[in-house]
Amino acid sequence: MIHPNALNTRARTGRLAKAFALAFAASLALAAAPAGASAQAREMLNRLVQSQDQNDPAARALTQGRGFIDDRKWELAVSTLDRFVREHSSDKNVDAALYWLAYAHSKKGELAAAAASVDRLLQSYPRSNWADDARKLRLEVRAKLDPNSVGDVDENAGDDLKIIALKALCDNDKAACPARCNEVLRGNHSARVKEAALIFLGRYGGTEAVPTLTQMSRSESNEKLRMRAIRVLGNTNDDRALDVLREIAMGATYADESPTDSAIHALSEHDNPRAVAVLGEVAARGQSPRARTHAIELLSRRRGENVVDELLRLYDALPEIESKQYVLAALGNRRDPRAVNKLVEVARSSGEVKLRAQAIRAIPNRGETEDLNLLLPLYDSERDDKLKDSLLQAIGRYQTERAYLKLEQVVRSPAEPIERRKTAINILSRSKDPKVLEFLAEMLK
Image 1: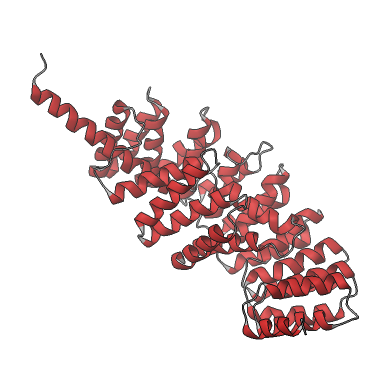
Image 2 (image 1 turned 135 degrees about the vertical axis):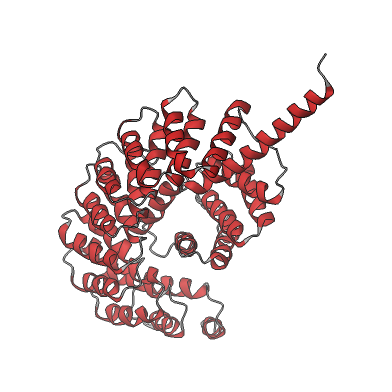
């Protein structure tokens, strides 16, 4: 017969393991970028480069919302992404928007709203690429809402207890932590326990962790552990990591979730300014075309003037038109005056129509009202009909009086093609400006 005290002890141990599993899952979610983030970032840039609809409000709203998250402007991110979900409910990226909306809510401390967004994502899109990330975020949010919560945890109690023990040992003796983590990584433990060891090794190991992380980044047979090692290696911000990450990022095999992709992300997050040049090298000479364009996208999201320097260098150095298009789209993410100067130069005088059109599409993405002063004269001087259409769409993205007046002028002008006049009035029809509504009313007289 089992003594009741033994049962109570087991119950307490089980609750402790489950509670820790929640907290540990949350730490996993915070320790690395979401698995779907790379695919989402690439999808947004692809829409900017390849979309035939140059005034796609859904793509624009989602890009803007993610930009606010990158800038840690949580309130703006919430309002933008919430509007996206309400106004573009049939868009193929609603699941991604729900994830980032939940993430922004959680950063604002709005835990109930975060939980509601995550639950909606998992209920409406159970097969979404974002489902795994959403479950991790849900665990994190629930752990904050109710530290005693134990729901929806799939854990192996033995693994949880090992992780609890390792964490306690590392927290209490940081100097000995690297040796303990290395022992776990060499031992016969589950991938989950080894993943925890990698996280603690990166957190407490300092420069001593680099050799182990380097070895696992290059040759670990378990791909999930290898990707974790790569990301943790990048998070050490050790200069020795740059050459290792470059070697992996330049590889020929590439997928959205792969060692190559993880290395590109790790480079994009590495603090050393030299990481910008390494990313530029991957963008210029990486063996996979998809890796090259993704490197350009992540490069554009780094802070610092040297990023614009690298993008301008890449534009002149890259031979492929498609790669140049990605650089132009990336320049549209930068507020630096040199970025818009290059975009205007290409829009005005490039010999490639595709590049001119891409530059025109990119200019409004900067979100700078004064850029309209550059687009208006371009519209008046342009003679190519398709580029003129692109310019009209770009002008329509500025919700200012000068933009509205230009659109009204196009609507009134009998010299303009009828399809362009229809485009202009369709853009105006989305405005709530009283003067625009007055103009539309006059059209009926």
